[in-house]
Image 1 (cartoon, helix red, strand yellow):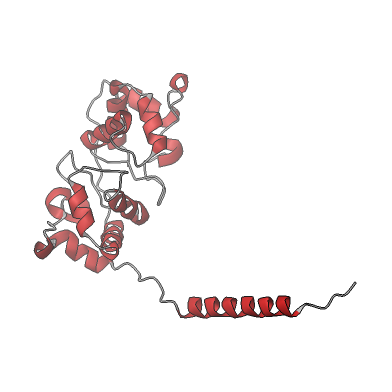
Image 2: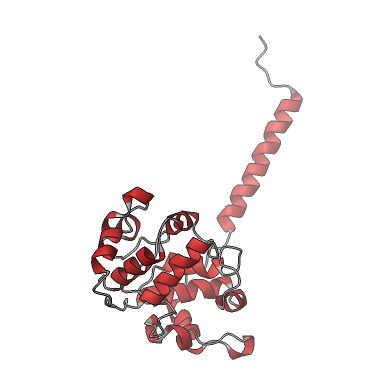
Length: 221
């Protein structure tokens, strides 16, 4: 059997090597992705950008992300990758039609990353459970779930202290009860679509169960 390459095969092989070489050269000279700048994020968070109609984030989310408005989430100490992911989600069908949509669309991708990096440098603000009548129910759901309704323990994803998991699951410990309950109800109603997993879980919970676990999570440290 003649193992010699035909002229056509040789030319094809040479062409493939040439293309591969060009691609490798381009990759070698491609600019590295810019590193997020927390200082720039801090400035935008505190001052906004009037020229582009971007209000200061601090006006709703509080100094250092420690919101005092219970329907607005505390953002200090929230994972960098998770905050960035949510800012992007506001510009898509994952989280449409919210007050954040216009602001998120006005931000560049770099600015989204800078804000996320800044918030990750700030400490999380603790909270406290308020309803003594539901604290045990909330604790049971958070730690053990609701087996009969196929609701898993919240702690299995968000951790025993509610610290979350970077990029995947948010910090929920210390978060405002009102915000957490409203978020779970939005998942339940299908108006928030950023997590199909959470939509399915919340759908199997009653409003009483949602409110109980939201209150319990507020007291986690």
